[in-house]
Picture 1 (cartoon, one colour):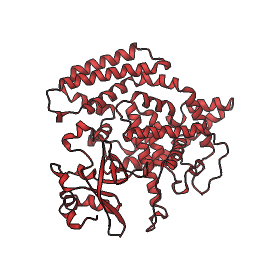
Picture 2: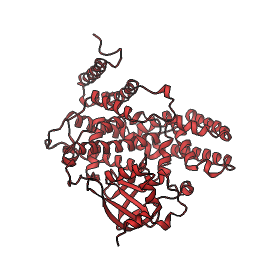
Picture 3: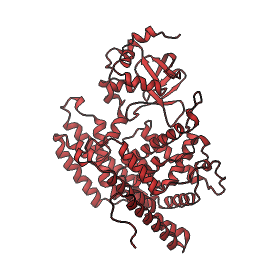
Picture 4: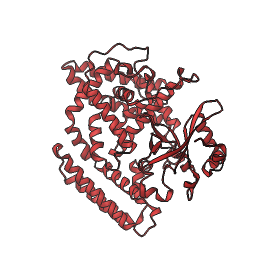
Length: 492
């Protein structure tokens, strides 16, 4: 049964979408996103806010076919549409009616009438966890976690006690590679204690003033930032041989100038992925498991953006031609290509660290999906020998120089919004940001890789090491030639 324009025009959500949120409506039409309109009877008591609208306009997931994400800033919810139902993280919602509409370019997009809203009301968000993914990414850095926890003056004594327990752990607790699980249990116990103390001290406040999930995530990140230098070196010891094996394989593939199609990526998605490479290269410099996990997710998101930009620049803008969908069959080898290009330091150690010392992510959320996707890419690289790669099937620039990657870093900085905790007069200049990322890139690409290359080449390591140092020197020299105001480079 098809619905009529009269049915839509009497729907309060659709009326607000056409008037108050018309810009969002136009964007959805132009980009052919799905518009979900809850039936009128189900809207009683629901406030039609920008957040509510964003969560009812869906765009294709960059990761799975038939999956869609909300169009809010963080794409915080993921849905699967199958057999006339929209499957949310908590339930399945029936699609009562479906209509194909057309935008001003005569391109089709879908409008669904659903039996009820796709997400819970503002009142129930904290209780049901509808907004948990968004909250997790808001308080990732140490500064944000610290500021958030100190914003509760009732809990200052709890913070002092937590600092004491962290100090005792760092100074007295012995961690062995074979007993990392015991260390994880001890740290989780400390975090759970601190969370319980916080909640008890805040019990007199209205529930709307705080969220247990917020507090738990902040305390976990705060604690893990402060024990990182104690725990992560032991994780590296436990993964030493695997890291060496993978690093040697990455170096071999990088030196052979491997291209995406040689790894099994279909022609349509064989493109350079500079933003993803820059993002992943900073993985080892992140200071907590949650921050590392967020880096993995950001890498997947910018990888999808790199592919999307590539498709927009190619023949897929031709009218009536379907844009290919990036499925896991292409995502995994394409992600493997990004790993080869960025060669992140202690990659397997970082994955193990996240898996065993990050507790605030649910197995169903997109952050966990990011970890699983990277583990799959790691297995893809570890389980294949790549001894007989076929020749590249298309002419494509085989690799990006460090200089090009740094230009991407500056562009990403210029296009990003300043942090809410950064004062206007303290904004980091593009040059400062570039230098910060240069440091991360050089550390990720050369420190320890040089040592492993020396071991691999058994005697010819001096030449390999010297070649790497020369490349870094050339790169720094080129920075000075770019008139960035730097006073160092290769000295005569």
